[in-house]
Amino acid sequence: MKEQKKLNYSLLGILTLCILCGVCFAHPVKTEAATFKMGSSWKEGKTKAGNYYLWISDSTLYASTSKTGKGKAIAKAPKGHSIEGGFLSDGSTVFYTEFDLDEKKPFDRIYSVKINGKKRTLIAKVKKVYSIQAYYNGNLYIACGDFGSLGTYRLNTKTKKGKNILKDATPFDQYKQYLLFANGGLSGESHNAYIFNCKTEKAVKISNKVIMGELNFASGKVYYAEKVNGTSVRIKSCSLTGKNKKILVPKLSADIYNIGKITSKYVDYMKDNKYYRYNIKTKKSKKISKNEFWKQ
Image (cartoon, rainbow, N blue to C red; front, side, top):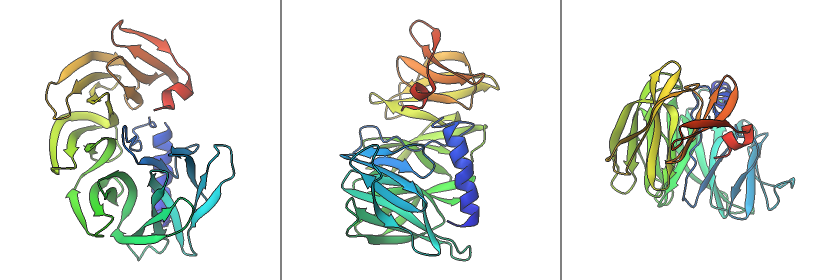
């Protein structure tokens, strides 16, 4: 991929692997209850989609029926190009991005390929792609633009037509037709957060204090962490329409850039390089393993 994008992905990989990674990271969309699962070149391990495990290595997309298998190369970048970033698959089709290494060529290629490596199809050329983030009803939701000020581009995989739907916000999680968006760069500052309905293409603002990436769906509701100060967060929830907001935890002492999964029962977080799970009912924390924290 382009040199600048290589640097950006390297940074995002570090950030992501530190909350869904972790030091202010924009973690990949988890696509809860969605058919398509997201994987990425910066993610450790393999992504399970249907009956297959998928991963990217050395600008090559691999698929295997075994988690420990070497896999089959189903897409490989030609000379002067690279395959990086996020990809989506339902275990039958894979959507991925092929980047041009020439900085003077701003358009990147969005492809689809069958899980067996056949029917590789160019869907469209899109300007300044960062990562494919979500899929709903034939549409791909792609983070595009300059690093630190990314927007979202909706691309129809059938008509091959696209549209910029949000100029300064990208998806972080998905539940059915709903996407959770946050704006701004990958800094620790507070951000605006939105619930976006893919059917109506309308966004509802739910907060202006959400820490980048620290919001998710769980059991049909929205959960998110708001910055209180430099050492603590407030945990809140709301409905899919942005209503019925509730404060679940008024103040939780934690590394504010490392809040993991949030549900109605618990909050996973880091503090002093250790992993914890806070029980919302008992108001007590217990240590958990690194694997438990990262397993979303």
